[in-house]
Image (tube, rainbow over all chains, first blue to last red; front, top):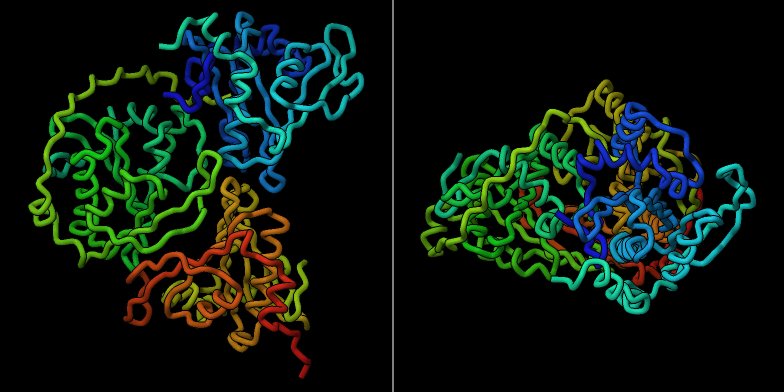
Length: 203
Length: 209
Length: 195
């Protein structure tokens, strides 16, 4: 049951397992700090359920985002990837990603998911521009997005408090004409090799 | 239930609803419902869709299965106009092993039979992406007439593609028995799937993040 | 507000919804509906307008509606996008001139050109399309004049006064739209002189 197939990850619809277990784990572990720009106060299941229910009803109220669950090639659910907000008039969308399982940070999972998402946004939704934000301390994310072709467009100074330190917010953007395409980038970034290293040859 | 030659029409529930969680995320579905944004459908989305069709006064979602009881997919009519008695005809073989088979064709013929001979519709509209040869071939064999091409209408994988428009009138439908008599439909001998695992539905009402 | 030569496109507000009762119950709705003749009471109109407003509030309205108003302020009809599919950049248009003395004379065409300019330049659509029936010769002529292409003909799909007609689908791609000024020039649309 898959929509977007990658080499290291697939992007799929969210399952009950994600809603009932994984989300709660991710919202309370370190990954939240990285994915939500410094936010980290503990959250109960009840609170989280309320948030999820709100979001579930949002599509009926005109919410335009599209969200996928990230599943690694070994079958484990590892996080999510999506367009948090799609502006159809300007054909621009804001990307958001969250890898909740530390064991999958790096190794190419995030990059693979990013390439799938960017391709979807340009190929299927005919977007002209994509943007995303991260923190200056998130060097892994910066490397990933720059490798894929995003350009640093603005730096919000001392925008978030993380672990007692003020960090800058970095805003990246990519225009359609700057997108090289998933296949050339998979080549250039050696994703096939990374996938083989981690998971062995594709059957 | 309405019995056909190679398939039967049944309610879209139970095993069909479970299979739909897969079917609604795959190509066959998106090709049949080409007006929708292509995006992931969670189990809740599937449930909501089925419920919406149950409440739909202008259409219906019906399952079709092989003579062995193997669920194949769904047939639908939608946007029924009561005054001129026309509707959209939609069909999808969720189990893609049956795509293009005579079972697939019989599903469509059974839909026409139901719409013309039971629901007394006067006309059915159908459309297909221009490169969807399987669907176009089935529509033609069923008797639909090509009525035009909507140029560059739908986005598909990086391009804008044409949509072929078809229609069939009640007086162009010779009746199911006569239609089938002229077609020599043959079963494909496809092995029925194992029954899907029943989900534990105690926690219905989950939400997506 | 979009300003034209003969008409302006304005929000479809009270001045227009107040006239819905008259417009729905007469000839104006006969063509747009493909042959239907309605019996619509004031109460029914109020409910319809209320539901429409609620739909808009919920973000469920798939369209963009404009009222057509003559240069001297008279509301004469509706021109809008009935169904916008943003992820296909596709707009299905609809129009109704409620005041029959304004049929012909360029008012509808002026309004259509304003809407097309809005849709292409502001909503960045790639294609505008609309449907009419073979009994609506006025619109069929207008389609050709403005540059639409006949794309599909659904046979025997509209019933008007006991006669069957076809629904026609017309389409206009972005690359076929030379801009409002160029079309006005080409078809010789001109502002009316006040009587």
